Amino acid sequence: MTTLTQLPHPDVADVEVTDVLFALSDPARLQIVRELAAGPLTMAECGVTNPDLPKSTKSHLMKVLREAGIVRNEPDGRRRVVSLRKDELDARFPGLIDSVLGGR
Amino acid sequence: MTTLTQLPHPDVADVEVTDVLFALSDPARLQIVRELAAGPLTMAECGVTNPDLPKSTKSHLMKVLREAGIVRNEPDGRRRVVSLRKDELDARFPGLIDSVLGGR
DNA sequence: GTCATGGTTCGACAATACTTGAACTTTCCA
DNA sequence: TGGAAAGTTCAAGTATTGTCGAACCATGAC
Image (tube, rainbow over all chains, first blue to last red; front, side):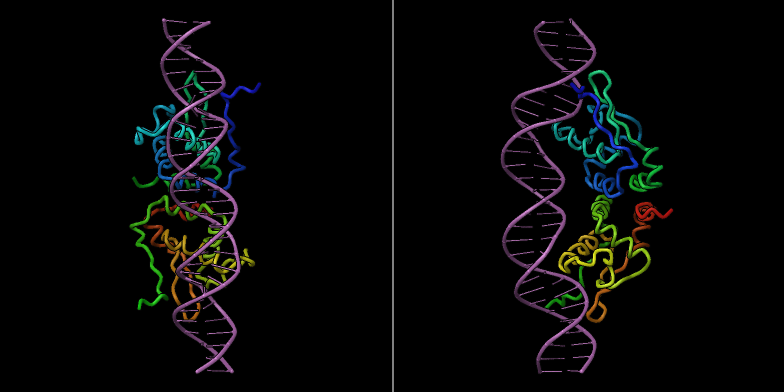
């Protein structure tokens, strides 16, 4: 049976700019991306801004980011480490992430 | 009676980046913005890509773009001229529109 | 082994958003 | 004066998203 620890990640070449824009158009998701811009975080660590967010909700927010190719989510022991796919995104959509994050 | 020919336009200072991203995250709306990047168009002229789009639908797409501060819609005789608020957007979100449109 | 921890998935409901015909307004033209 | 043209608004149905508890799955600690 398939081990569920490895989540599917799209190839950035297959994601449309509209997918990325949509994923970033939610304040909670954008906030997560801002936090990740400084470096990878575990699920528990990110979302500091939203401390009372149910974990199922946070997991779902992360899923949208992951399916848009914005974030990578990898198992690390019994945690998961989430990281921005910055280089790949920059190659596919030059300047986009920086301009979205820019200011603030 | 309020004349309906002048539609409300938000101050770009009041629009959030998430509002802009959301408006651009729809392929039909993004296509309209791409067309407008070359210069203002009347409602009838823009949306060439979607010739069979009902006018109420097109009007609604435009409303979303307008309310996100992306587009200006001004009366011109019995037509309306729609234009990108490029300078204002560039000032508020430097580089964003260009990177979304993929040019540079 | 057993158990707690960190996280995902499922399912159901709430909340937005999209689509479109029909009605309406304004303006131009004959 | 009528129309007709160009668009907006309204209303109603459909579809997509968001939210979150409960169930489930690995892993590490004991």
